[in-house]
Image 1 (cartoon, rainbow, N blue to C red):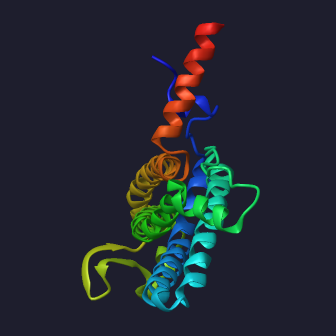
Image 2 (cartoon, rainbow, N blue to C red):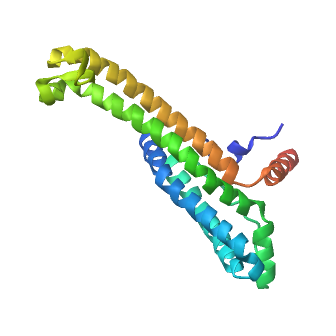
Image 3 (cartoon, rainbow, N blue to C red):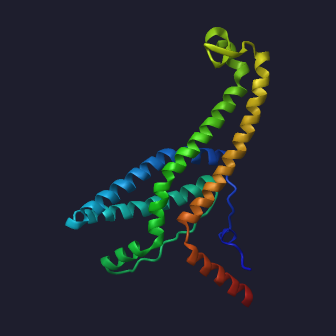
Length: 227
């Protein structure tokens, strides 16, 4: 059996915690922008293509999708430490029509489009999980330092008018701080795990397709057999 694709490019996704945190937080605004652009351009372009007005709009959508794919591969490499090879087929040197035919028949172009659309729901889920865990963990860990400065001079759980638990001194807040440290440890592990999972997803969507990977692996096997 030949080496796997993830080994061929010289990297395995082991993203740093801070890189994963920044990457996952950025996915929501980038997902909103990417989804809006792709849906708007391709809907408007297809709707007006019959009168030729939509063709430049569709062309803009294709070019933007490929440019966004390049940006995303660079972002994954920079923040998650996972290299994604460029998947595009070489464009013909001459002929505008031939170059556009190559772009439109290249599966990597449409995987870029699909990735930008899927980045919105992924970004919402990732942003929600990361912000919730980190905010709860940090708030609980630092509770001894600010509990007496809250309204009423204490922390009331679950609310100010429903005082099931009252924390009115730094000593009483210590168990909550310990719980916060546990939550932060879980947040660190989950953030890195989500960064790894997204790097693998991005590699599958934005890297060379299955056929190209099989060709690379078979070529590597042949060279290994000759050596």
